[in-house]
Amino acid sequence: MSEGAIGIIVLCVTAIVVSLIVHTFIRRIMLATVVSATIATILFQVLAYLHAGYLDPFFLIAVVVGWCWDCLIAFVIGIPFWLVRKPRSRGHCRRCGYDLTGNVFGVCPECGTPI
Ligand SMILES: [Zn+2]
Image (tube, rainbow, N blue to C red):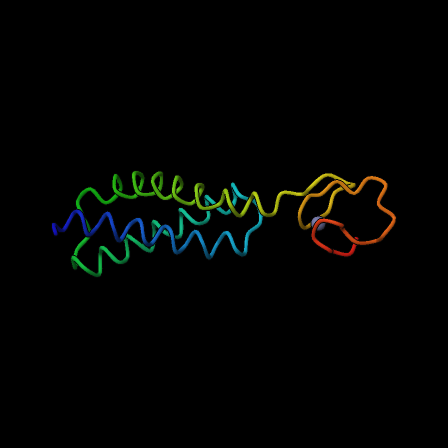
């Protein structure tokens, strides 16, 4: 496998791992995306520097392109986090979203979650 292909794989893996960690702790998707991309970009550049032993002459271009790519990955990974955390409307079960209008039992009939 070529050096470039390994670099792209390392870039993607770094972005995915950092995104998963950051989205776990930061609930706002856009903030988490930017923070993830920034951390992943710095981490990748440090790894590339340690691997090559010198700073790439196109270092700044690599940072900008890498950051945009990391943002895309971080955003895509953030979507399932966002969907799970999206506040449901009032009158619906907070676990499964079942409509609880008129419910007098105190538990969701769909999933059994106490209201
Ligand atoms: Zn429910």
